[in-house]
Image (cartoon, rainbow, N blue to C red):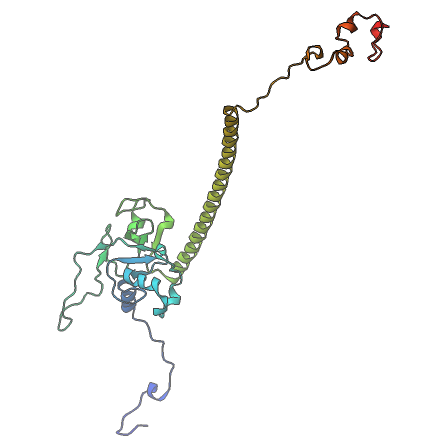
Length: 281
């Protein structure tokens, strides 16, 4: 059984088989993640920034994105970027031996594993074949091998102190990205609660200060009034002096005789007809 020209067809030419899904070029995928901006896909150039999910960006592209998101079709993939506080500028170690030939024609060899940056501790290149992380507190980029082999809470590049939660994996797997996403949500919630508590404390302190100032002002005002009254010769509290009615020049002799303190009352032997005194009865 043959076709025109006496050729014999093969089985895959006669029977339709299910095509295998097109596999992604790993080299191109790594090159896109580690050498290109995650937003614009332009080649990475200094200054380079990274988010809390471990993606790499050109600082210029990030600023444009934060100013106007509508210009970018991929804006929904970067909703976690609210401002520059959500990114960290990276401190990278340049690879002095990095360089590619100007012409890619002929028999010249192109090293696709070469990278512009390396680990400052063990010297491996940051090309995606090896895991790399950066420290959120200082921004230094180190290889995962260096962080595992030299266990310390001091940065191997700048000498600053950091914690385990400060280490963020660059271009990690889906599981690692999900873990970083959860950590980012937890950190933002803690920051929100801390800001709320600080605001409440500031308001309480301000209220207490105002109350103290009002009491102090009232006290000072009362003291000032008292001093002004005394300086102006105002009335002072005095103990009243008791005077005898017999020495009152304005009282008549008849009126004075009505009281037992009069001379007439002292000399009489019987009770007075107006003021009864049982002593004389």
